[in-house]
Image 1 (cartoon, rainbow, N blue to C red):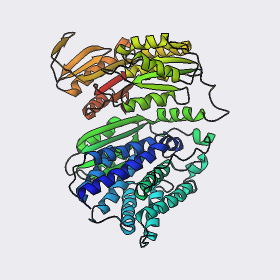
Image 2: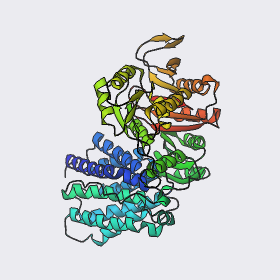
Image 3: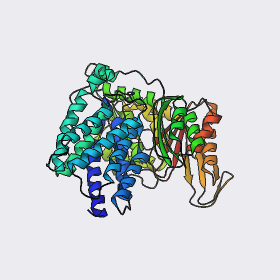
Image 4: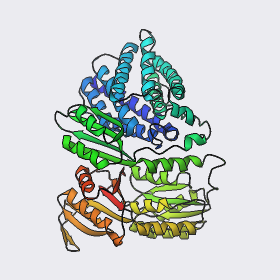
Length: 543
C-alpha cells in the first residue's frame, strides 16, 4: 500500500469510529459512575477521537511509520479525561505495532496490535482495575489472538470482536462493585465497544450502526452517586526534553487520585483528580512547558448529571416544561455548556452566532417557534443581537421574554438560574438577577492602534476588557489576562469565589496565568472550559 492509501484508510476508520461514538455519546455519559459520576465519559472519548481525526486530516506523513506517529501524537495531545487518556495509550500501543509492517493488516497483525494496545493501557494505569475499559481491551486482544490463524477477512474478525466486546462490557458489573450496585455497565468499556463497532463497519463495508436503543431510565442508584473525594479533574500537557515520567507521577500522586501520566521524554499527558489544580500545574511547570490545560469542577458535573437523569425517572422528574430557552452561541464547546445546563430542566434551541456573525430576526423567530414549550426566554449573549432578539419576541406566537445578556459568560450565568417549570416572566427575573451578579471579561487581539480609557493598545497586541471596558493592553498575554481577572474579582466590591475561563478557537497558553492565580488567590476556584468561540481567545467570568 502507498502512503496515500494508508492515509485514506485511516481517515475512513477514524471517521467511522467517531461517528459511532458520537451516536452513543449521551448514553455513555449517562452510564458514567466510575471512577467518579461526572457524566462525561462519552464526551471525553468522542473529543479524543476527534483530535485523532484532526491529526490525520493534517498529516503530511510519507510512510506508515510517520503516519502511526501522527495518529499516536494526536491521541495524546487531544486526550480528554481519564477515559480519553487511557484511550490515547490504546491507540499508541496499536499504532506502534502496525507501524512495523509495510503490508496490509491481516488477522494475525490485528491480534498483535490489540495485544500492544492492551499492554500499553495496563502500563499507563498505576493501579489497574478490572471491570473497566482495561478489561474490555484485554478481552478483545485475547479474542483476536484466538482467531489469529483464521483465514477469514479482517472485517469478519472485527465483527467477532464486536460480539466479544459486547460480552466483556456486559460482564463489567460482575467485576466492579460500584457498577453492580448502580446497575450499569462501565462507561469507558461501553465507549470502547462503540469505537470498535465503528471500525468494524468501516472495514467490513457496512454502514455505521445507529446508537443502541435505550433500555429505559437508569435506576435511582445509578443516578444518585457520591461526589468525588476531590473536586477538580485537571488535565494538561507537559513538553520538554528528557522528561522524567516516574518522578512527575510520584510527585502528583501526593495531590489526589485517578492519576495518569503517559507519553514519552518529549511530551507527557497528565490527568489527576485534586483539590489543588494550581499545585499540579506548578509541578508540571517545574518539569517542562505546560499546555492544553483543562480544569473541570467534577462536583458541578455530577450535580448536572443527576439533574439530567432525574428528568427521565417517572416519580422523580420535573413537572412538564412550561418555558424553553433560545440562546445565541458561538463555539462548539460553548454550545455543549448551554445544552448541558438546560438538560433535565427544559428545552433549548441554540442559534449559532455572535461577534461578526449576528443571527437575523428570522433565525431567532424560527428557533422560538421550534421550542417544545409554551413560553420562551431568549439570551442574545451579544449586545449586537439584542435588537433582533426583541423583534423576534414581538412577532412570536407565544409569550417571549428577552434577558439582555451581552456575553457568553453572562448567558451561562443566566442558564444556572433557569427552570423550565416556571413561566417566562419568573425565569427572566431570576436570570436577570444572575446576570447582574456575575462580572465578565474578554481577552482579544487588537486589530488596530488605539487608546481607550487612557490605555494605549497597539495593533496585534493583547487587549483585556472587563464589563466591556478596556483595562489593559500589551504584548504579554499573562499580564493582560491577570489585569482583567483582578478587575473582575473586585467588581462592585463583592467577594468572588469562582473564576470561569472559556478558551477560544485560538487557545491561549494558560499555564502562566493559572500559576499566577494559584499563588495570588489560593482560595479561588478556577474552572477552565474549551469554549471554541472565534475572535476572543479567552472569555472570563467571576462569581
